[in-house]
Amino acid sequence: MTYPQQPVIDTILAQGVPVQFDNSKAENNKFLHDIHHVWTPDIRILYHDGSELYRWDGFLPPPEFMARTQCGFGMAYLRLKRFDQAEACYADVLTRFSTAYAAPEALYYLGVTRYRRDPNSDELLTQWANLRSRYPLSEYRVKQSFKELP
Amino acid sequence: MAVVPWMSDYEAALERARSERKFVFLDVFNPG
Image (cartoon, rainbow over all chains, first blue to last red; front, side):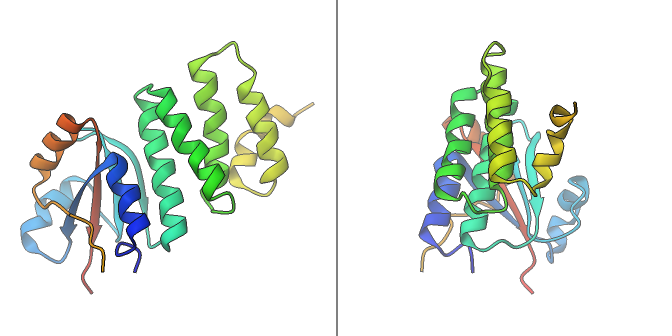
């Protein structure tokens, strides 16, 4: 339902090499055991050494899937300290999918990305203030709420 | 209908990701 959509495919292929495993096939059991697989769809974004940089489980319809995927690539780039590319992913989520469930995460980590790139900037607190305003009921608002203490 | 060009060889996917400076996008599914 989600994968046959061309915008979804384009989102994956822009920054990913897609590989897929069927969990009903015995030949995949060892691999799935080794990665502690538990539920489908089980989606992971991996570095080329096999290390996991982002993951989620469960079906998402195309717009939510695309937003979540972009958040995943954003985190993957952020963990590698490729800040400009991380920023582009998060900005894309906020531009094209501002009402998606992943959007508050994108705004939270947009601030983190800019702060990590330039610790002297005020971007962390600026973006977190935007988060409080735009997504006041999100979990990511809670994650920055220590900054709201008197 | 559009189709994701899934690979099935994990090691080959890692190597392709390295050479193309991309990430591996891994999906585990159940056909049921």
